[in-house]
Length: 185
Image (tube, rainbow, N blue to C red; front, top):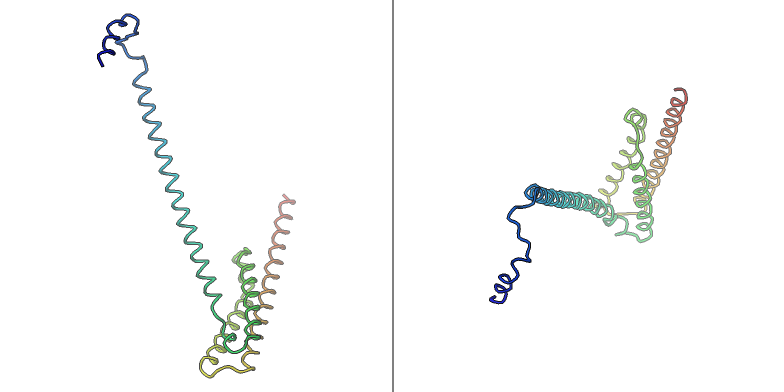
C-alpha cells in the first residue's frame, strides 16, 4: 500500500483530477436505474406470462388426459368376448374420431337448431347403450346383447357421419352466401 501512496504523491501532477462532475451525470444515473427497473419489470412480466401459459397448458392436458382415460376405460364386451370387444373398441374409436371432427367444426346457433334431430338421435342411442350395459351388469351377457351393442355403435357412427356431413354442407352454403354478398357490394 505504501508503494501506491508514494506513486500517487510523485505522479500527482500527471493525474487528471477534476472536482466538478460531468454535466449530465445524475440524469445518466437515473436513466440507468430506470432502465434496470424496466428490464426487471419485463423479466417479471415474461416469467408471469410463462407461468400462466404453463398452468393453462397443464390444465388443458390434464382435461385431455381425463377424457382419454374415460374413453379408454375397459368396454363391457371385452369381459365376455374378445372378438366382440375388438369390434366394440374399433367402433368406439371411430365414434370418438367423428365427435372430434364435429367438435372442431363451427356452426352458428341458428343452424345448430336445425340439427336437433341428430342430437336427439344421439341421445337416444346413448340411453340405449346405457340400458344394455346395465342389463349386462345385472343379468350377464349373451350374443343378442352383444349384437345390440355393436348395432348401437354402428348406428351412432352413421348418425355422427351424417351430422358432420350436414354441418359441412351448411357451412359451405353459408360461405357461398357470404361470398355472394361480398360480390354484390
